Image 1: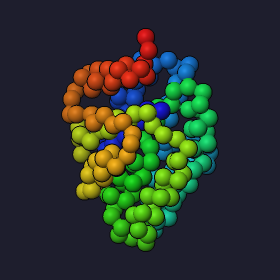
Image 2: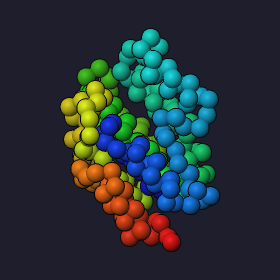
Image 3: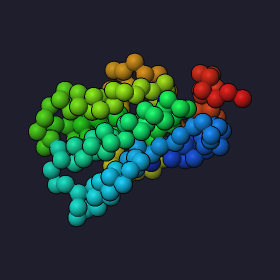
Image 4: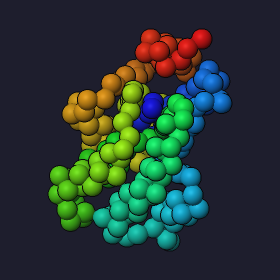
Length: 189
């Protein structure tokens, strides 16, 4: 399992699109985590993104995200067992944006509880590699103070191999990512 994780407007979608061109499409599943696989996850995310239907309570909003993750994990596990799995976002985003970007303000639970719940949902899956994008190419209002540092904290605390993607152009970034996947034997030619 390979994860593209990091700040909004940092080039993840561009690189994921390019990655589709160099991996075997028959044995690789690409998943945009907020979308998930079911009508449930799509519907919940549609509600979360609309101003007039999203929960006003921050904890309710985070629990809705986690419900979608819980719904998606069994399918992700099946797909990971049958081939390569490439995720556009992982549980790190939940902590980076939902905790570090907010702090404990308004959630009503402590970090340990939030982290334990998030990690429990994702426990059946572990990443072989995380590409962490922390350099943005344009501003995005979602990238509030604390999010980038939160990603770094999460990366520093885990056993997962992390490649910190430097601020490069599109082609140089693509070459770096493909080179790392080849080096690790995740792309075989």
